Image (cartoon, rainbow, N blue to C red; front, side):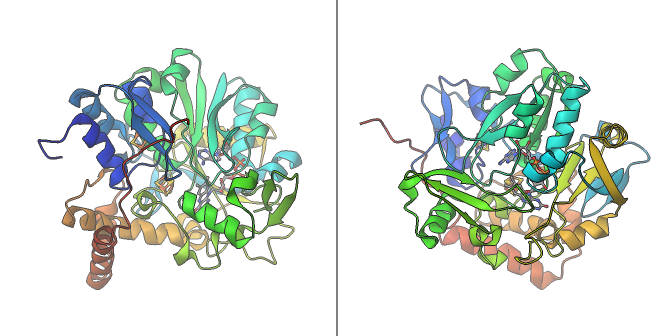
Length: 427
Ligand SMILES: Cc1cc2nc3c(=O)[nH]c(=O)nc-3n(C[C@H](O)[C@H](O)[C@H](O)COP(=O)(O)OP(=O)(O)OC[C@H]3O[C@@H](n4cnc5c(N)ncnc54)[C@H](O)[C@@H]3O)c2cc1C
Ligand code: SF4
Ligand code: SF4
């Protein structure tokens, strides 16, 4: 920060430097009369300042924003017998599993375990509701924050949303209810709420379970438009986009205003070559796509990280589940014992590396990429308990340099810079 920046400029620096993932938390921190997280002209969910902001409020946002601060599992949740893997973080048990209910397994993104766990938490009355994300009512491809109170609500929200989603946009109102809940979201969303817990004691009192999906990044708005163009669909005509689920990965389904629906493969959406996937800059420098701050993290089990077009046709879906805390381990065992989850067999961190080579590469590269941010004079996210500096020491010097300089080059070429957030004004 430079001394002459206004509070608004400081908030916008997070966005302009490509660090905002649109979680919505700053709206709750500042109040929606001052900051609104909304779809901006470049297609992302981003904060837009609508009232007077002061430095104190922006200081608080920097403390909790997952663009500026990301930490691993709170130390108090790491037990003496918790195991550690330098890449995969703290863990107590890792299993292959799926939802025991065939409908949940079918509807879910992979094997439906997050939906099955959410349903189990409600049915067993361990929580009053689930805070997670369902298909947006207004923006095809986006996710809307939602509270689920019943099995039907939970099932309606099954499936991965690869577009922007702001699960924390109304977290103040959610906490105001005074009821217990589970939070299901991306690792960065969980990092944000863990940050916020240091400022609002209700978080640790009311959030009973923290569940994440392992996350390689979400799709950029431009990447989604490019997909529509590739399949010959006018983006303005799209009325519905379901990325996956109904099998694993299941079809990517595009609905248009003329009532037509067309189905594609996951690979048609993302592209054959992973290095060309269109991801937000924040995802490229992400120090925690593996959900280190959660009780349980759920992942895919495709060898090499992506499905193969032939084998995935009839795949009913199998998750890898990492229980990181005692609460997560107990939940896993109870859900299996009570028939909500089917556990196949136990696995180890090295198996996860076979399923998720992209996560391993990113974890090793994160520190060098953050050094590239520092070289460019950019905001460097504060990280703790994520071991990225330690992992970077194992990288050959030339690889580190390549990652560091690559980040600097990306910034210098303007690829890591977003325009000032603006929303379309009604005409
Ligand atoms: C952006 C993104 C990137 C991903 N990258 C990877 C990866 O690199 N490797 C990997 O193994 N798996 C990845 N996944 C996870 C994978 O797609 C599955 O979500 C995961 O295996 C859980 O499967 P499931 O069948 O248990 O989920 P489901 O039972 O279908 O439950 C999914 C849950 O996630 C919530 N949710 C869906 N989308 C979002 C969102 N955008 N933000 C917050 N909450 C959401 C839903 O509300 C629902 O509760 C990614 C998911 C997302 C959303
Ligand atoms: S990441 Fe979240 S808290 Fe940070 S600026 Fe974006 S919406 Fe606000
Ligand atoms: S890759 Fe990291 S920053 Fe990007 S959506 Fe996933 S958890 Fe968030």
